[in-house]
Amino acid sequence: MGRADLQLHSDLGDGLNSPEEILDAALAVGLDVIALTDHDDIRGSFLLRDLAAKRRSKIVVVTGIEVTTRAGHLLALFVEDEIPMFRPLPETVIAIHRAGGLAIVPHPLSYLTFSVGERALRMLAARGDGSSFVDGIEVRNPSYAGRVRGERARQLNEHVLRVAETGSSDAHHAKLVGTAWTEFPGDDGAALRAAILARTTRALGRTWTLREHLDGVAVQQWRSMVRDPYKRARRRIRRKTRPA
Image (cartoon, rainbow, N blue to C red; front, side, top):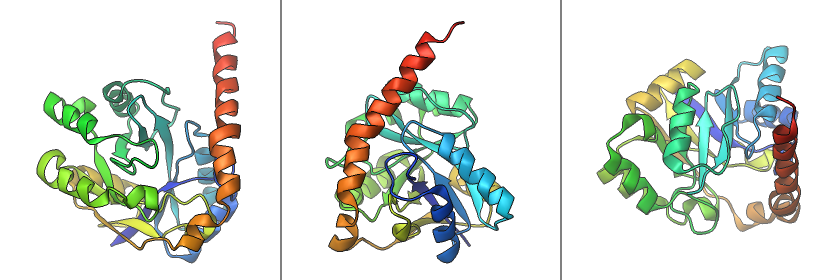
């Protein structure tokens, strides 16, 4: 069985460590697959994939991004381009699928971070449209924000959504990489993708201590709330002003 950490953040976004340090940490804890999912910015994911290839690392890097939708955050995995921000949730899921990716709901239902809520997920399920339905839901997240509604998310998936269960560390610090993970048959990206679609994954891991939560939290929150939104706004403005 392989182990994949599907939600990691680098210092190119609101994380605290470089892609190099993240790759080293993933290797140290024995992960098989990782995904760097900085907020609304896929460039770090490409950098990490190239770094792993250059090192001939045994760790497989899946490209990814944590997309900001109007309903909450959504992971786009196996994509090769950024997914536009601030779209309705169904439109974002469709865009991910058209890009060849998978849509995973991170820290679902949480009221401690910007998360897709139960009503939005039930509305997706009621649509009965596979193209706009998510492929997985994160039911194991070691942070307070991620686990505050974890059991409710698990129940919702069991009785309503019935999609793949995933686990991710949501690590913004290299020390926390691999503290939660998705277990799947196989050990590479293709096997992981197949397992998510076949719903043969399992979410495993531990919870963080208070000290682990507080380590570097001031810097991380400043990047998340101040620096990164400013950077993303500048990128959007530059794109809109580029000549056709």
